[in-house]
Length: 404
Ligand code: CTP
Image (cartoon, rainbow, N blue to C red; front, side):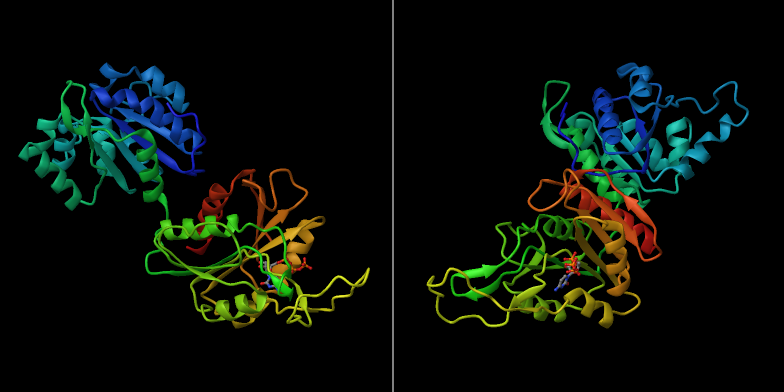
C-alpha cells in the first residue's frame, strides 16, 4: 500500500464503491483508504460473493459507513428504496473489481442485488473496472457485455496484463489503486474541452544594463501547476512564462518572455481566452533607461530611476467580456484580505487568490502553498496548506463549480 500523499483531490465528492466477488476484492480496502485520503465520502456496496473475499467489517471500518449488501435490510421501512437514494446521492459510482457475472447483469439491466439495482438508479457516471482471468476476459460473451455497457454509457477502465490469481500471466488484472483513483478523479472533473485558457507564471526581469536585472524570487510553480491542471481537464492552454527552470507541462503551449513589457504584449494577443489566470509575479517598476553598456562600479552609490510598468491584469479587467473568467493573485505580507479584496475590485476580477508570505508553507519557492480564494461577491474560502499541484486542482474545482 502506498503511503504517499495523493496528488488527486476529491474533496467533498461522494463516491459509491461497488465491490464484487473477485480475488481482486482485497484491493478494495486500499481503494477505500486512498479515496478517503483524497477527501471523498465513500459508501461501499458489496455483492454476496464479494463478502467471501473480504469481510464487510474491513470496508465498513475504513469507509466509516456500514456496508450495504441486501436490498431488503430489516428494521428500516425505507430500506427498500435505498438504492434509489444512493443512486441520486453519488457523484460517481465505481465498481471495482467487476466480475464477469456482474458485467453480464449490468449489461442486461438486472437488479437482483443492492449493487446492480443502484447501478440502474444511478444518475451519476458509473465507472466499471473488470477483473478476471485471461480466458474469461477474452470470452466473446464478456467482450460483448463490455461493448454493450459502453453503448449504454457506462465508463470502462480496462484491466491490465500481468500475473493473475490463477498463476497464469495475461489480461484481466485489476489496475493498481493509484490508477483507479486517477480515473475516478478524471471522471469527476468538469471537462474543459473546447475552452481556451491563458496562464501567466514566473517572474519578469527588467534590465538595468546588459548584465543586471530587477526581478523577484518567483519560481513559477503555482502557474505551471495551474496550466497542467487546466490541460488535464481538456482546455487548450497557453502558458506565458517569465524566466524559470521549470519544464513545460504536457499538452501546454508555452511562450517565453523576459520583461513585463513582453509579457503585456503576449498576454494582449491571447486576451480572448475563456479563462485567464494571472499568476505571474510581474515587476511593478522597470528602469526608465536600460544602459547599452555594462555600468562600471566607479561610484559608492548609484541611483536607478524606475517607472511604473503597465498593470497587465488591470488592463485585462478593462478589456474583458462578461462571459470570460478572470482570476488574479495577490501576494501580501499583512492585511492580506483587505488588500486582496481591493485588488479584486479595482482590477475587475471574478476571483483573487491570496497568498500571505508570512503564512507557513506559503510563498515563493515553496513546495506547498496556502491560499485563500476570494470571490467578487465577497465570499472567502481559506484552504489548507497543500502541495501546489493540489492547490491548483482545488482552486479549479472550486472556481469551475461556481461558473456552472
Ligand atoms: N499584476 C499585473 N501586472 C503588474 C503587476 C501585477 O498583471 N504590473 C498582477 C499579478 O499577476 C497578480 C495581481 O496583479 O495577479 C496582483 O499582483 P500583486 O503584486 O499582488 O499586486 P499589485 O497590484 O502589483 O500591487 P502591490 O504590489 O502594491 O501589492
